[in-house]
Image (cartoon, rainbow, N blue to C red; front, side, top):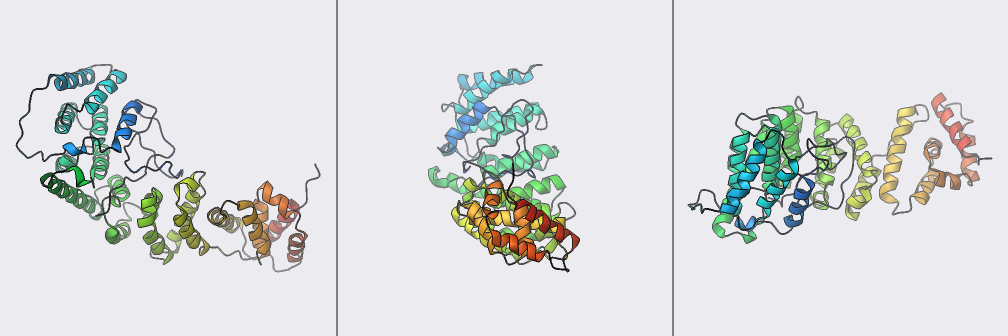
Amino acid sequence: MKTWHIIFISAIFLMGFFYYKNQFYINYEKPKDVIKDSTKTATSSTISSDIKLFLEQNAQLNFDIEQIRNPNSTTTLIGNNDRDKKIKAIRDILNGDNINVRDLDKWILELIRDKSIPRSEKIDALLGLLDEFGYDSVKGEYLLDTLGSMRPIEIADRLIDKFNADVSDGTKIRLMRILADSYGIDPEKLSPEVAKFVAQQSIGIHDFFTKQIENPSSPGLYREAIKLYTSVSSLDELNILNDSLIKHQDLLPIQEGLNIRLESSLSTQDAQQTLLPDLLNNVQKGFFGDTVKQDFNEHLYGMIRAPNADQVLSENTKTQLAEYVQHQQPQLNPNKADFNAIHNYNDWAETYANLSSHGDKVNFVYDMVVNSASPVQQATLTVYADPTVLTQLQQNTALQQNLSTALESNELSSNTRQLIQDALQRLQPSTK
């Protein structure tokens, strides 16, 4: 099994929470930025920003992980007045008619950060509160998010049992995220006995997700399982994912499933190295059909052209994507250069330039225009050229002559003729 990583699904176009303004989902291999794309779905959470900050700071230290134990082993619960005081305070706030969120955050944070309270007791306390206030309630959402922040691998089997019980799909999705986030904990700080137990729990999580994509029960749960499956499986098992996407198109259109895989594959540099090559290879070979491939490419181009993509994509990934995109160059037939064809070509050219220009996009695009053997391609790029590129193109008399000569052909469609005329007009320096 590969090292776990959480799928980046909700750092994009964040929506407000029920209580708070800040989004939270703990991520232990989170890069400094994520590729933004409007097609992604934002997810709310009920953990406050103070709790989020503390957990993220301590995540790198494997906070409390060394305290993992087999909950089936024999232990004696020792009285702890401080622990009981914190749990009582949390319970009292949750029982109130008007919940003071700031006070709730305060006591939750004190419970989590108190190293005198064993990890197992914190988890047991949160499970008890969940049973008391209900998993499907807003209070339950808050408690589940708190529980999930601890990556509770030792109770994975209990969480799976709860998933299979009578809870809402929203709760099931939260449980799935907790399970995926708990997968793959480094066993170095664990005793051999506990490490073995954690390995068994990890296998249970893996088998759980495999079942969810092989025998899905609803579109929403299937969508989430697809997003998370790559974080709990090996590269050798991606064929299971591909087969599932084809088999269950009634629940999730194959294009949506591929988009989810694409977002997962670009989420971190580790994912780019391990997941992206196989995905691009399958699409390039036409495994999913030409129509799906075209839609996939449009989604890919949008992500590559995102403002922060340059910070997220590794140099090796940019090279790999450039090679893939180069082979996707659409044809511009002079007799069929309608709006869609022109728009698609420009999208391709912009994407290819972003990947291949090595920081000098202006000159790269200029060279693409003047070196193209197709007047239609030249006209398209000229019409869409930004002011800096256009200024250089206006000084190239050979380009203007080439486009003027192309207009003399009687084989041009009306759309193509108009396109070239528009390009020639743009090439005239402004008199203002």
